[in-house]
Amino acid sequence: MGYEFSIDDVAFLRSRHGRKALLTTAESTLTPEALLREMPDLRARYGDRAAALVEIVRTRRKAAGKLADAGELLAGDVALQQATASAVAEHRAADIARHRPDAVVHDVTCSIGAEVVALADTPGIAGVIGSDTDPVRLAMAEHNIGHRDRRAPWVVARADALVPTSTADVVIADPARRSARGRTFRLDELDPPLMELLTVYAGRELAVKCAPGLDYRLLRDRFGFAGQAQAVSLDGGVREVCLWSEITRPARRATVLRSRGDGYEVTSADPDEIEDPGVDDWIIDPDGAVVRAGLVRHYARRHGLRQLDPQIAYLTGDRVPSGERGFRVIDRFGTSERGLRTALAARDCGSLEILVRGIDVDPDRLRKRLKLSGSTPYALIITRIGRAGTAFLCEPGRRGGDA
Image (cartoon, rainbow, N blue to C red; front, side, top):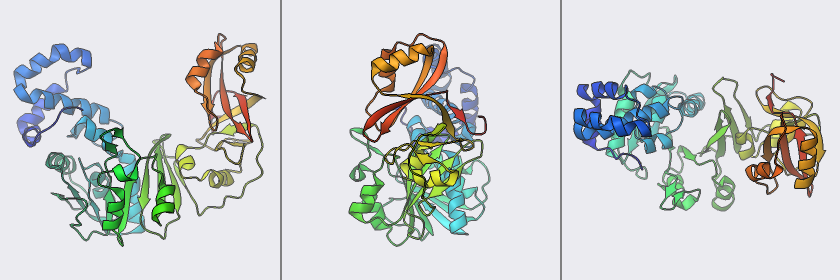
């Protein structure tokens, strides 16, 4: 579970002595093995504060690449795991500024303040409020936001997310996604409960960050949610589904963010007429946000692609869109292990990347059973065409623009 910080810990860490102690602690290795020899010296120097110092330094190292100003961060490991990546938060802030210029935004579950930082640094945001029920995380948020000047005025305060405490133009909430049994995708196990958030803030513009596995279709069909479901990925990993209450937006949106800056968006308002299914030179595995948002056909139409099968998210075409990953098709066979083993051995297959969609195959177990002993790398895409399992032998994956 990680170290449990107290208010006194945070006050110490923010003090002059605490800041100096953090710099000294950061000179240590702090790996699990090294801690056995380093911790006695840290305890001799800093007493009961040593564990807090170690947790902060290790968390800062993990936060590098995820959160802005990671070297100044006050947060424990659990809070870091729950925090929204800066790139995702910055995109949302820019989205709000574009749709609601000069908005005041209230993050009602602000935790350590990652979202508030992005909002307060975004041109077009008039002001930011952060609130939470956890006084320790609020104290950390105050430091994380206030360690340098921000573009917009901001304030943090202790408040219950289910008790409206502001008249902000836009409300953001990030319900905890863990129950007593661990990580949850159940709508009734989020904290605060999703339906209560939607009810409490009915009639106001609300953005609720949810887990990628959230069944937003159930939310729409059973509970009448009429807003937008936005699936967001960062560098190939789907980070969240954000529910927007504003009904004037397209019902579904895929936001693909990349550190190298060539991201894009697809929405359900885009056209989705494509050619009949078939197999062309390349197979393209669309970004997870596109798949999660149910916008595979819309994305295919944009790039002149078609599906291998109407029910499967793999696409095919004579080229790979820039920045996307594609696999040049070499051969095609059935999915019997014996047949695959024979075909791969004949091609001197050594390393093999296996992608599966629409059929029950464990890639790691299959790879072991194939007993590869060659020297040539390949990719194997196993999927379903109609009712038949089909395997495509391909060259190793390449990014569009590099192929």
